[in-house]
Length: 426
Ligand SMILES: *[C@@H]1O[C@H](CO)[C@@H](O)[C@H](O)[C@H]1NC(C)=O
Ligand SMILES: *[C@@H]1O[C@H](CO)[C@@H](O)[C@H](O)[C@H]1NC(C)=O
Ligand SMILES: *[C@@H]1O[C@H](CO)[C@@H](O)[C@H](O)[C@H]1NC(C)=O
Ligand SMILES: *[C@@H]1O[C@H](CO)[C@@H](O)[C@H](O)[C@H]1NC(C)=O
Ligand SMILES: *[C@@H]1O[C@H](CO)[C@@H](O)[C@H](O)[C@H]1NC(C)=O
Image 1 (cartoon, helix red, strand yellow):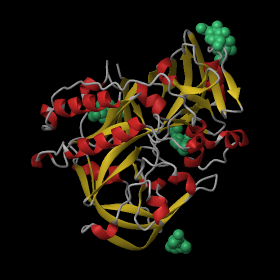
Image 2 (tube, helix red, strand yellow):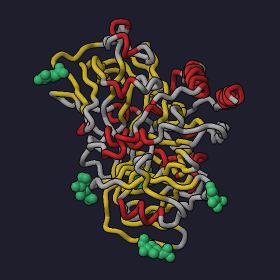
Image 3 (cartoon, helix red, strand yellow):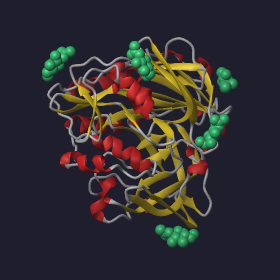
Image 4 (cartoon, protein in one colour):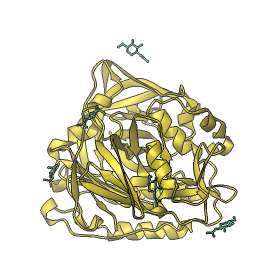
């Protein structure tokens, strides 16, 4: 299976069109389907929820803490292969000189059983696998100054080996989450290149301390935020995020996100590939006052049943796995799923795996109805024939739409007019 995946990936590398000027971008459509192992038992699902709680600095509910058992350590062979292939993907696709800083493209490979997507990012002369995260603005990496134990399973950035690294004196960062996990360290600048678009003096935050929860995530060399600088945890002056810095040099001031279930997707900078979606893009003005890419939502439809709700804010977040919605929305959706229930053991809603989930159609800014495929809402086996729901309720005053949303929707993040373009993938 792994070999099949690798050869499919190589085929894609081979089939990748040479990047051209944006006006002459070739249409290309390719799909790498990674075949899921039917015997695979998913044990670490509650962690997906806990990550979101950590990220948004919300205390983790007791039920969820109880369910965070020894299933946390995951290490599948396929993901290792994917990682190796990623390195290849990076090395084998140099952009021609002329195209530098006009457009760029980077693969996004699902790892950790689809909990997150990682992409190769060059910092100075070193390449790390990082999560590209539209829900934050920090660019932080594991550094070689962490105790050796912390980096044994991780890639880590070594500033002393990078000729272009410069430390910013007097600046540091500290991210603390609701459950007490944290990362902190100092700040410098280096050249950061994502798929051929580069920023020469990008602020890079070097973790010199990380708490144990981060260490379990052995795929991740760091996080690259694509939100706005208000969100940065750097003190005393918040630096511009990578996207803010790179925007002026792009052919168009935007990036697009194409994430797939069980397949390699991509982030693209500076152009919109029309072959990635069907129909027309709907444009929705984004609310970025808090630094997030945020929209309002006022209802949803399941089958023929349309429910209007008071408008709520939703953060569009590639760095979160699930789709966290209001309790009314989640209950309204799972009412249509026989056998669905809130499970203490899972810390969230589960449903019988043999159920076919209905699509979830959610209002975006009163301008667009985004259809989330039922198959994308099944995020996998939990236990005893029950599967974990990709839509989960949250009592927070805002919603977070993560990868479950992106697997069904192609999204354009337009920094010029601060709006989001959306269309169905297929
Ligand atoms: C970060 O810098 C502030 C002052 O700018 C200082 O109070 C704080 O202790 C520093 N934190 C770390 C982790 O170095
Ligand atoms: C933002 O710009 C894009 C591309 O020029 C355009 O199609 C879209 O309508 C604009 N968005 C809004 C909300 O006006
Ligand atoms: C924009 O977002 C902020 C912060 O979440 C919120 O308070 C405000 O009401 C939003 N504005 C609109 C027009 O929805
Ligand atoms: C439609 O949704 C509403 C609110 O979610 C619910 O009260 C009602 O029972 C649903 N109707 C059907 C036919 O499912
Ligand atoms: C699903 O499986 C359960 C037993 O595990 C069975 O009772 C139920 O009828 C099945 N439902 C469907 C739709 O196959």
